[in-house]
Image (cartoon, rainbow, N blue to C red):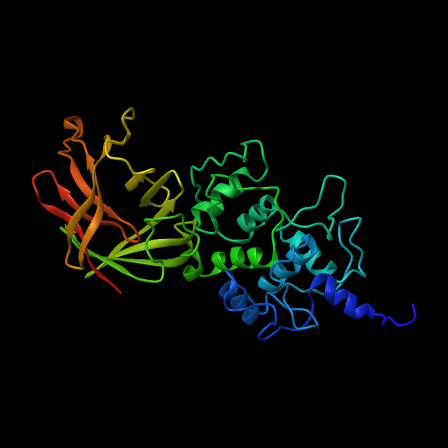
Length: 363
């Protein structure tokens, strides 16, 4: 048409699939954007790339083709265009190489009719499935979103990425599995799967999770423990992923991987593939009791809130006191532990008043 400039085929491909060169200082990504740091991080890594007009379009929905491209760049797949197993993704499509590679790696799947539908927006449910395959996230959070049923394909993957501090759902206890994901949201999910500092942002209101970028050091009767958040692909042939690894000063043989999980229903900290050491039930209310009807753990009760607790690290003035009942059959005299927002457990005291654990440093 007269007066209109035609975009080249290459430009159209770049606009549809975001295959342009990396953008520095994108015009539509201000530092005030909620996911600025996550997108900037992925731009630096070349996982996220912008458009020829200098934008990154953070609030535009991600297509299934674009998701495959970003995953492919992250995994350093060969993106050379080629034939795929999907009837609607031919070799001449810009994303075909990444789609083929991601499918071969088992990271993406098509639909039952043999199509991939590369131009459809990816949903939060599909995103959860991809992230569960992309990262090592073997642990599950016992979370019951009101809009996620057990017969959904995304049910377990959603539990896994919640446990891995990649997402936590919405404040009204929904996950919205059928809602489309924007480029900034997808970037945030990928960044959280890669870096502990971004996992710190995937928390509920008034979270008890610890800062994953710092080492927390505790004094115990058995020695001084260092709790460090780190990536452990496998341990003793078991998949582990990101965990808090506990080491003991002067004891090179002591090493325990622990998992810290929080949903809007509970907080739990315990040994990987084993029992919980410390937990807390939400909402926090004096008198709330759990483990009343189980033989696996003694009953626990919130016995006080707003408690002042002194530790070598600092004096906390708003701790939650949890009392664990004694069980004569287990020769257990009971104990009390204190939980603080942003620090988890800061102190544990036996029934006879002996301090059995307390926070001494955060580095």
